[in-house]
Amino acid sequence: MNRYIDLIQQTFDFPTKEFRVENNELLFNGVNLMEIIETYGTPLKLTYLPKISESIQNAKTYFGNAMEAHDYKGKYTYCYCTKSSHFSFVLNEALKNDIHIETSSTFDIPLVRSLYAEGKITKDTYIICNGFKRDLYKQYISELLNDGFRNCVPILDNLSEIDYYLEHVNVPFQVGIRIAADEEPKFGFYTSRLGVRYNDIIKLYEEKIKNNPNVSLKMLHFFINSGIRDTAYYWSELTRFIQKYVDLKKIAPSLDTMDIGGGWPIKTNVFFDYDYQYMADQIVKNIKWMCAKNNTTEPNIFTEFGSYTVGESGAVLYSILEEKLQNDKELWYMIDGSFITQLPDSWGLNQKYIMLAVNNWDEEYHNINLGGLTCDSMDYYNSEAHQFNIYLPKVEKEKKKQQYIGFFHTGAYQESLGGYGGIQHCLIPAPKHVLIDRNPDGSIKHWLFAEDQTEESMLKTLGYKK
Image: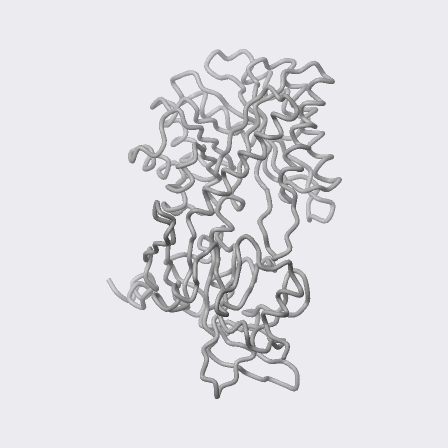
């Protein structure tokens, strides 16, 4: 008999650090998922909080190793970009690890205020304020600066943004400048819509920063959509960015920091082979070499990791409601949730996640498609990152076994994009959300963060109930 466990072990180097099977049931980071399902039911989202701290500490180790190996003089600072997940439990866990924060929109600043009021951050915490800013966002940034948040650093996205701060900030402050990087060749535009053109950066500095005693240039900011990957495109853009830093440093002595943005990838399949240490080594090596070549002091390095911080902490668990054979070869498993509303990246961006059976690993397997609950024909999932098919255990009806499945490393963006607590396609309710942590003795503890969304909350949002 060709069992599901045989298929997985033959296809992947399995078990892995995150996944193993005991008694035909899947464990995720040592958590027995069937126990979670039996306690809370499905559909449910879960966040395994220790993974957030683990990812942060790993990154700090990678860059620390690289700086030591290359005798690098600058310092490394880890920032978490809140847009990946704004939830309090994510920030609370991340901030245990001596990190700093990157914001991207207006209402991030009240979030920062809340964290400060709770003692989770101090006025020395770096608040890197990114994005194209409307007046209210600029107002909130100015108020932070005037209130003594001295390491709040607005990243200038255009030539006129600094005018607001010069008018409204009453204390000396620092700014950064975001470079408008070239997009990947396959992208729909040549240059990012965000940031200042390379040719305008020195002009911006000389006309509005250089001779103003209240403002100094702290940081040059670099970000590309494809993320930090070992490609000719990435290294070419990074080299171009470093050269601009070197040129700018010659006339801007206060410039001492290079922010290389976000974009470390997460595991989207079981045989993920990205070499984080190698990439950190190469980044540090390239910066050091170009600075030495140009007789420039090595800058401090900031990163802004969002998906990398929180992505691998998340999972979504579903029950299979029904099996449907729609023609001679297309067999469907219908889940008790929706890909469009609960895993919107899988629908909108064709993002693939690690998908594994939670139970019945000793059963035979077959090729199936997964269908969601909405009436939309696009609410399906039918391929993996490593192949064009998906396979799950074949559970005969007469055995009266329930099949459960999980999508893993879903912790970034999905709640925000799916409209957490709001109105979703076909009024599919948001599932319950469970948080999982470990006690000091290593034992598992878990609790409910949010119940299933109710019909009453939806009717109130839609105006049917006062």
